[in-house]
Length: 265
Image 1: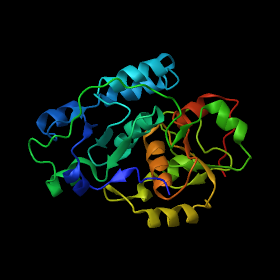
Image 2: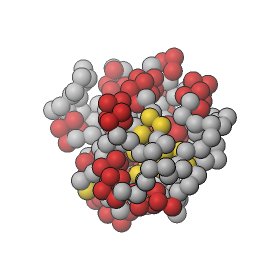
Image 3: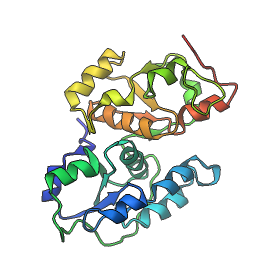
């Protein structure tokens, strides 16, 4: 069983060697944040991951970005957001993909406040070190459009974490085409959550089984733009799946390519 990528707020009380990363917007961070926390410029990270010149294939760019947070290859990065869990999952995915040790705080900042487990002065920051990025070295891999298209019809099981309306094609968001990838199994990211908390492993296992996944499946997650796909990957790992990958650019990227098939059954 792989280590759980999610920790409970109460676990923070015992941590004395970690980098605490806040993934909320700048206004929320300025208003209040955990002592010693470093804000991840999520608005820049999200845009950079989608841009060709700074995509997740640009190892040097992301090595510099991760270094700027004070993260290294040995100290644990603890990520929290505003409770939605998707933005924390997005940052977690990028960090672990490049070889950083990272976990997500279940329930984010609201849950941390409720537990009052990070007292002022708690030494939760490490010294800045030289992070060495190693693309693909995390527990969740990355798959691009061409790679996923080549695996359609194989033993790969596609986990579509979008809403039911998006999956059916009724809600196209900003995409020219709507629907879902052929053979995709649908499990909305909202079902993975109990309020603002990711469900425990046994509940996630049951949900995935009911959605058509089986133990040992090669799971590839996607949504429309990365955040829900990352959370789905976290859920799959928590449920015990190995070899999980994320199609990070997701359906928005797929729908732009007219040669990529889309179903609306």
